[in-house]
Image (cartoon, rainbow, N blue to C red; front, side, top):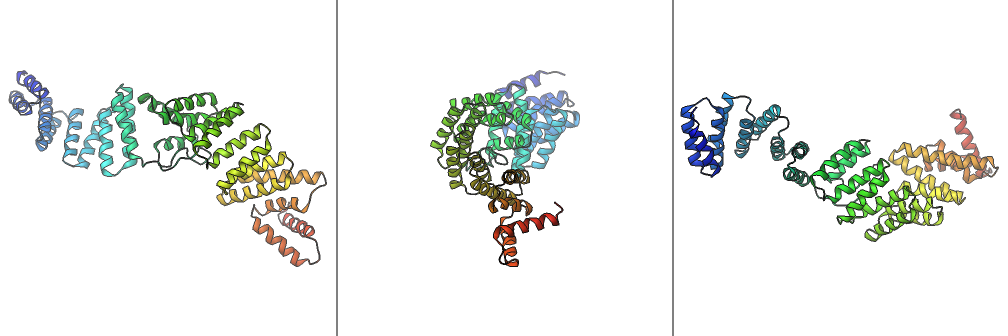
Length: 420
């Protein structure tokens, strides 16, 4: 083939003389009408000049000559997208990816088409794959652009939450929440890997450091977590989440005073965060300061009266102070809430603690009617209203008997019926 026309066509295309490039490529095709790459290059010139239909026609001719041309499929997908032929564009992209699985630009284009079709979860997955490929190819700018597209697809965060069991760290709608959900499901290593490539693309992403710190805490890697929280703070991500979780990590390492300082900083930012009070209460409890722990749990319950963890932790603190009536009352409230939530793991843990208190008192000969209540509560599945109704029925059935006698009777009947 005389490649003079072809070379001049490429030169004119670089100079953005698209009409001249088209003319040169046309002459080249007269010389060799079976050269697929000339059709591709003339198609690009048509596309750049705005003649989209002619571009599609040339890409189609190229594919007739070379059905394995990734360039032709990708370019025709671009042209079909410009013509708003989304199904045709997506079909070409899939062919390009099939032929070249590491084609980052094709995954990026697939994400764009899927976004236009309204398939947001698929679009996010495509942009993520494109970002991974761009990162592997050391094209950090393209990788950052893909990450930005992902974030644009996430609704804006409306509130911040702490990472506690079944509770996300930042916002349900936030991109990083998806990673934390994976960690909650036990996929910590996969979540860390995802955050790592985010940080490779943008080492200044403070929120990513915070997110990784939370996952590292879940893995028990508290020193590494603290390093990430420190980095987030250095990047001016001074959010309550950072201080709250760094405080938890410091407390786990025995740095109780440092933990309390972090919790105090968190409360300066968000004074009505009930979870910070629980976390600080836990640290006071670890220090043996049961009174301040109870004060913090009580403050947490003032803000959120239905938090079973606060009742449970306060019950433990009351137990250490040997204020058993208060402890039982808090355990009973925690059990009722866990029962309503159908959180049976925590529910049974609370019930076991109630049983321990009851057996301990029974063994010492100090069991009272109040301490019989947890035994009854256990038998009726934590439903306090059922326990009270059974006692009232027994007192009506056996007039003249004491409340304690009726309580023992109800418990004995239930245990007999269940073969206890």
